Image (cartoon, rainbow, N blue to C red; front, side):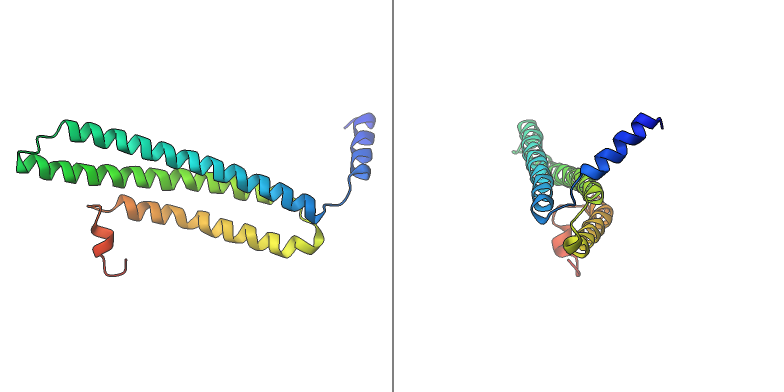
Length: 151
């Protein structure tokens, strides 16, 4: 690092004020708002995409034929399972990004413990998503989870 860059870095660190609770909560609120908007948009896309695919499947099914009707319900259930698992996985990626952002934040000293608890809770949630996603992916039918003894 050149002398000028070192001086600039030192000056910047001297001019930075310690984090405040207000600044911390504003930054946290911004990150949570970003997550909420992203997840809400993803859920809307999920609903529109699933509805469109179900409508296409419905349009191509001869409901006068009982076998075709049964196949329709099987395919619709499989489609819902796949789409839901994809949504879980994508939401997990968004949550991981939130936790990464939290890890970069500098809380004021009086909020350090609560901040670490928030990071731990977020990390635990992110860690649980792959198993939940695989549980959904492993379903044979949309109503299987309801019928399982521990569900």
